[in-house]
Amino acid sequence: MIDASDVRAAAARISGRIRRTPVLETRPFADGARTWLKLEQIQHTGSFKARGAFNRLLSAAEAGALPDAGVVAASGGNAGLAVAYAAAELGVAAEIYVPETAPAVKVAGLRALGAEVVQVGAKYADAYEAAAKRCADTGALFCHAYDQPEICAGQGTLGLELLEQTSGEVDTIVAAVGGGGLMAGIAAAVEGRVRVVGAEPEGIPTLHRALRAGAPVDVEVSGVAADALGATRLGQIAFDVAVRTGVRSVLVPDEAITAARRWLWERYRLLVEHAAATAVAAVRTGAYRPAPGERVAVVLCGGNTDPASL
Image 1 (spheres, rainbow, N blue to C red):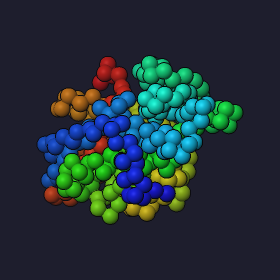
Image 2 (image 1 turned 90 degrees about the vertical axis):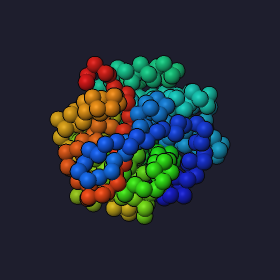
Image 3 (image 1 turned 120 degrees about the vertical axis):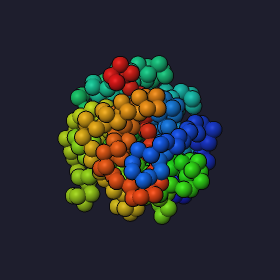
Image 4 (image 1 turned 30 degrees about the vertical axis):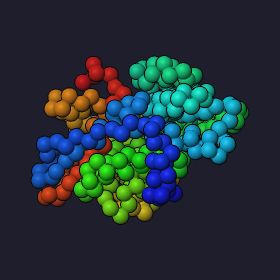
């Protein structure tokens, strides 16, 4: 479990290591609501994940627990890119396990950052199992993609930043959910001040099913956003924070995600991956319907995508 104090500590720790990404106030794309877009797709390595990766590695370094064996991560792509980047910045070796379905652009990015890349299995769970075994064999530091306190707290620094940039005027933050690290971090950061809505593809309802079941449960993974939101189960930290803070889940179909991605490009020349478009789709389709006058910020969580697929 994490709370706002963990997020504030993470913000101090990673200061100067990450970009303070801009907020764009837009013409309302929900009736009667004031809307902003948080442009986290231009964060280092193209997603919010750099925040958590730096917090995990720097926390370990502070504790004298950053081993000579380096760091290992399992990822659909974005978490691995972030860990590889943070490791390179800190002079630490990184080994990243990704499923064979990981987009070529992300695999190429990992190698360009100097990480050793191991592709295994058809889904994130396969890469995770192989990475965990590697850590057990070598003593390397494991960086979970979404279910470690330091990772979640680091991601939550986005929420603190967003509040500062909007002078605390936001009522609701909408963010995509896969494993839930971003949602958990933001919800902890703004607890008691702002509501958080988790947007999920219909084909990967990790938060939705967990809230209904009363605990994280395995789900099938499919659809256009599976490369970034393809966790088979919500993280325990994310579930605990979601229940404590009252996070709501809304589901959107793949066609709405694809349309939202195209709309962001055509309207604002913002190129994002399908995970980021999921949050926009939730508002544009009315899956989340703001009240009149509600002030809504939507997180564009990543931009690691092939422009040719627009």
